[in-house]
Length: 77
Image 1 (spheres, rainbow, N blue to C red):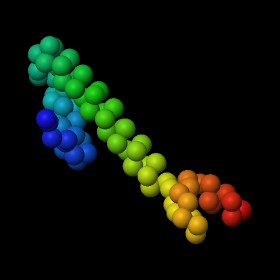
Image 2: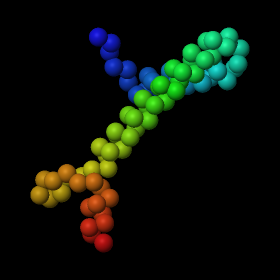
Image 3: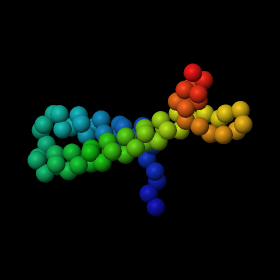
Image 4: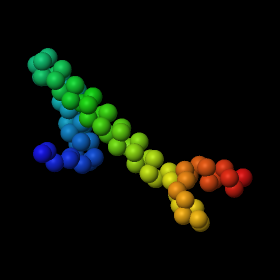
């Protein structure tokens, strides 16, 4: 089974792909392949960030309930 790659490693890989494509001195077939890898990595990174945002946007109330951060702020107003 493949080991899960960290967010930072995926980001580094995406940056390397972008840099290589920006240079423009690679064959078209490889450029298309790298572009597809980059799109996939970008989607994975976006999913990771969305999940992190959902996790960080929650808080525990005094009665030990987990609520969205925005809900608890709006309740106070």
